[in-house]
Amino acid sequence: MDKKIILPIALVLIVGLGLFWIINQRSSDLKDELRQNLEGEINGVLANSDYKDIIKDFYAGREYLEVWLFNGTLSDSGEGLLTQIEDSKYDGLQPEDYNLGQIYGLSTNAAKQGKKFKELSSKQKVDLELLLTEGFLMLAHDMEKGKVNPSVLDPDWKFEEKKTDVVYTELLEEVANGVSVEKIFTSFYQGLDLYVQGREAMKSLYKIHENDTLTWESEKIEGSVKVGEEHAAIPALRQRLAFWGFLEPNEVEDSMYFDSTMYRGLMKYQESNGMIPDGVIGALVAESLNNSPQKLIDIASVNMERLRWMPKMDWEQEMVLVNIANYQLDYMEKSDTVFSAKVIVGKEYNESPTFTALMSYIVFSPYWNIPNSITHNEIIPAIKKNKGYLKEKKMEVVTNSGKPVDATNVNWNEIGDGFPYRIRQKPGGDNSLGLVKFMFPNEYNIYIHDTPARSLFDLESRALSHGCIRIQNPEQFAKILLKNGTWDDEKIKEAMNLENEKVVELDRKIPVVLVYMTFWADKSGKANFRPDVYQRDQALLEALRDSKSSSDQA
Image 1: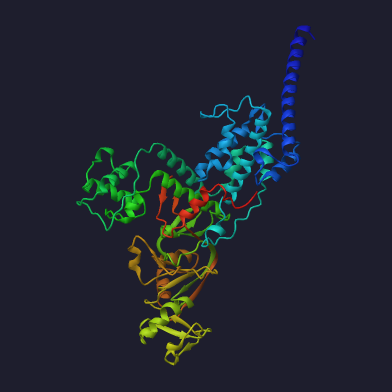
Image 2: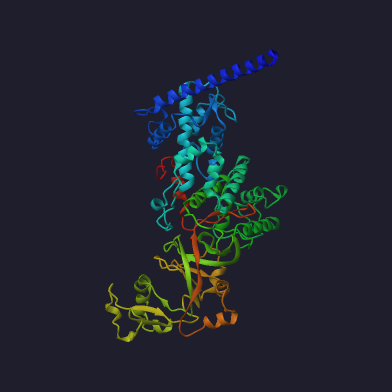
């Protein structure tokens, strides 16, 4: 071979070998530092870490090779993880919980965006590597299971504990083998469109928050304010309607007069936020318009955590989804809403729990077997005051086996806690369950049913029941559930008006999912917010913002 060709090749090989030796030597130096840091009693950045034993075993198993650094600075994986930690705010989490402040503290341009990590000492490199590894494990845990333990925080969260077979150190190995960090973290909510949509809505909320120049002092309304009236809160509320895009900015005037332009904008706002669009400013409207972008971010954060708590399920399957906070039932097929209905849910002291169960049958013209608590607290005291109460309410006393008992032979004045019978209301239009109930057997004795008090569905706040779910248009719901049979409108109407109850088994079991979501985003990206009727959000928000509230270790 020509010497002129051989010489350049040799030079390339020499240079290449030199670079390889330098890189390998640097890697070897970091390996030694990692080994010294992790062997024995761990000090330094992992001294108080709940994950130090896991991290020690992980690095020992890979001969102390780094994952997040290359040639003394962040590798592609390291940059990807830093981005995921920074963006965890869109999941409603706090990036600071995942060592972001300490990581930034090692940056050579800490005051600027696009952090760089150059000219680090060996100790700083090891610190950066370990901080990123611990941050990865903590964030992976919180994304997979939630940061807060729902069984400790929320006694009405009755879903089974989220089961997972994820081993977080195996995820670390995947990163080391070239899998992108983004792919790993997006896999935690893959298939849950509500989460994906909520995350995008959070990004929009943060952009709005960054450009927010308004003051958000609380404006209180006692009673109501109608168009044509004046109120001291009008200027601020008008300004907020403009901020959210329901009024043109040039329509904002510093006036206490509630004019027709504001009236039209208010109705659009009410409709967009699930309120009755009556154009009247009441306490509910004022409370909603008091919510700053930061407050909405807080509300969204709480609900993103609730989505992380949800056990894994097939969201494409046929299901009945009830959002208690939205007072709405949706019958879903392949993630599309086929039927929606207003619902009435439990009162604040009879809160409807959140759980899932399988609907298996329908009862037409049902008896209402009155729960013992209602019997003792409400029915028996009413009977003592009015001996004709049972007859007026079309109720009867029965044994536990359902055999009728002559109520006149019961000494109601001497009844204590040991009442040996049950009371039930006969089928009919006055029955508290209405003309049909939909059964998904569960330990909480919760079901969906009709109601004779149909006018209550016109109310804006519908937390009125003893815990069960009352549904508007139950005959339409029954028809949808019985669509695979021979049930037409006439047959359903007939079954709903029998003298004795009729049980109809469904030809399949349909999941019923009861959730409590004060925020969600729809497929169009629109963020929806609802009042926290059960006052559950604040405690969860405080736990989320507590840096020590993670429920488990990896």
